[in-house]
Amino acid sequence: MTPAIDADFVQLPRHALADAALSTAAAAGASHADLRVHRIMTELIRLRDGELETAVVNREIGLAVRVIVDGTWGFASHAELVPDVAADTARRAVQVATTLAALNAERVELAPEPVYADATWVSSYQIDPFTVSAADKITVLQDYSGRLLAADGIDHVSAALSAVKEQTFYADTFGSSITQQRVRVMPVLEAVTVDTATGGFDTMRTLAPPTARGWEVVAGDEVWNWSDELAQIPSLLAEKVKAPSVTPGRAIW
Image (cartoon, rainbow, N blue to C red; front, side):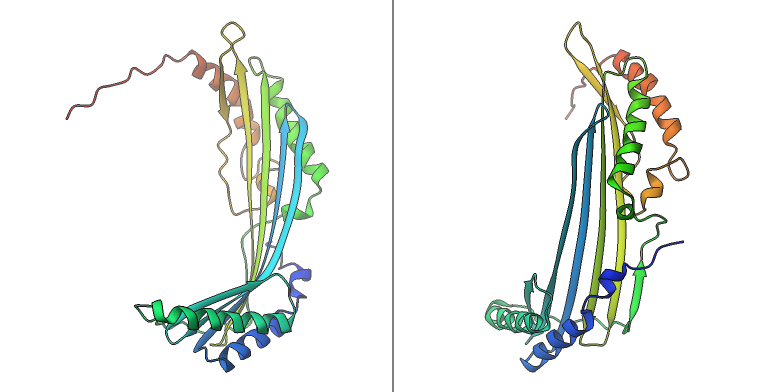
């Protein structure tokens, strides 16, 4: 079951910000205005040979107002989520559009679009990666790293996990108001084999793609068969090392 939008984002003064920004923009001469409140959370964890190197979580939030004045776009943004600030941001967006109008060679005409009132959308995932502790994430990456390091011919292993959660509230003067949340993860493990005689090395990484899913992609084999892939990498890397180099061809024009 896909989780709901985080309560702390829903509890932000989204509608008060929208009312302040949109009414101010319209009063200042905008034929169209929309407001976005956007929050993005990112997490990056890196391990080298099973040892933690990096574990960082970053959070950013802000609002942006977009307007059309006399067929010209105007934009402005701010980091403070206060109605008075939203109204001032709308005024600045109108000023930008007014200033740029002299340079606009083609008037903006919006295509017809249905009104989506109080709509919500959440991307499809089972486990929000930001509800899983960093310690649990590190434990899984250490387990996967250990499986590779235990295999013959593997000298080093790098493991990384990138997780992102984006939340957006959108409202416009047509009457639409939309709140959405999406999550994505990108897990990667890379095995390294070293030729001690020559000092050369070669690598092979896992093939799990970045995906708009949750922690369920990383932990266990339900979504991606980590057990099978990690078991195959050592032999595939050994074959790669033994494979002859490609003989370059010659272009014929």
